Image 1 (cartoon, rainbow, N blue to C red):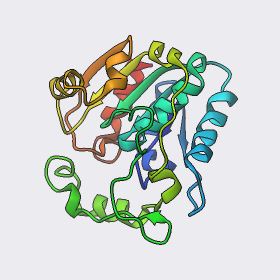
Image 2 (cartoon, rainbow, N blue to C red):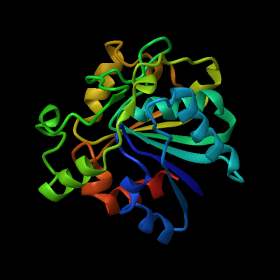
Image 3 (tube, one colour):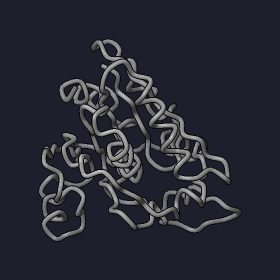
Length: 221
C-alpha cells in the first residue's frame, strides 16, 4: 500500500528515514513528503504538493500526518475524500474552517523559524536525546508566513467519511476524547469513523520509536 508521510512543522521527508525501512520490509510503499517551503510559499502550494502525491498513486492511499500538519492531512481529505483510504493523525488534530493554520510562534523575515526547545520542555520532548534534538533543530526548515497564518478552508463534507485514526503520543486517547467533547476539535466531532490509539512516546515518535511506529502503521494499513 502507498503510505504518504507528512512530518510536522519544520520537518521534511528525511524525518521518516528511520521509519521507512521497516514499512518496506512489511510490504508497503512509503513515500515521505518534503513540502515546498520558500518565504513566498503558500498553504495552497503545500496542499497541491500533497495532492500531487495522492493523485499519482495507483490506488487510494493511507495518509499519515504529524503535529500541526494534521490539518494539512485533513485539507487533503477534504480535497480528495475518494482517494484517501485512511487518515492517520499523530500528535495533533485538524483545525476547523476559517481558523489560522498554525500561527503559533513569532514570524521573522516572512517565515516562522524553529523556536528552540524551550517551548517543548516536558513530556513532549522527554524521550529525545541530545543528538536527536540537535538533528531536528539543525535540519529545521522555517515555515512560510503564508502557510502559518493562512486561513483553513474546508468545502467538502465527504471528508467526514474518511476513516481517521488518532495516535496519541505525549497525551492519552481519553484526553483527546475530552477535548472533542469540550468542543476543542469540532472536525473530529463530525467525523464518522474515528479510532483513538495510545502510543508511548513523546511528540516525535518517528525519531524515538521508528520501528514501533512503522509496525503500528502496518497494522492500520
